Image (cartoon, rainbow, N blue to C red):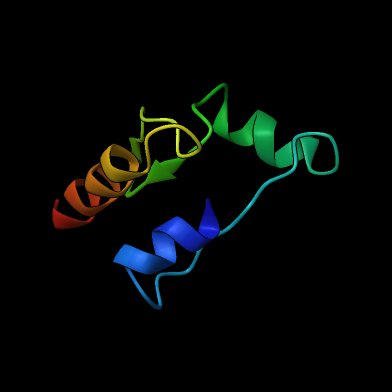
Length: 63
């Protein structure tokens, strides 16, 4: 997923949170989708739908 984000937004910082190792971060954010950009959830699943995933990332960055 990080690589797909970097393809459309080079230099954008990406933070990955492991729900098992960083449970406090998960609790702080609440239950959210697997990817959030600019406080906007990305609904497309990157593994199966690369184009729509990247489109949603770009749209979130335009806000």
